Image 1 (cartoon, rainbow, N blue to C red):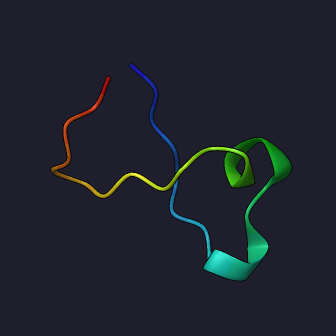
Image 2: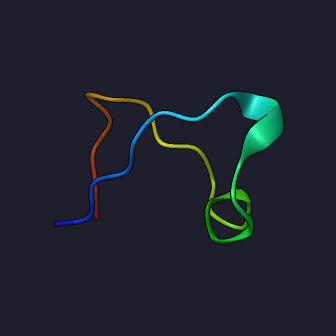
Image 3: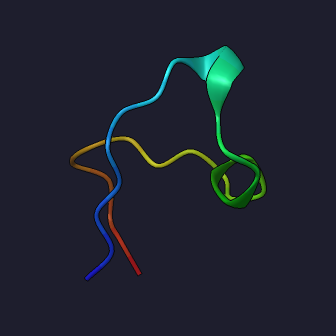
Length: 29
């Protein structure tokens, strides 16, 4: 399972900026 801390939208790390945003409660794959 992959957990990520919350980041401000304008300060996403490159590895996270390349991943589509996933809302909590959304179906994770």
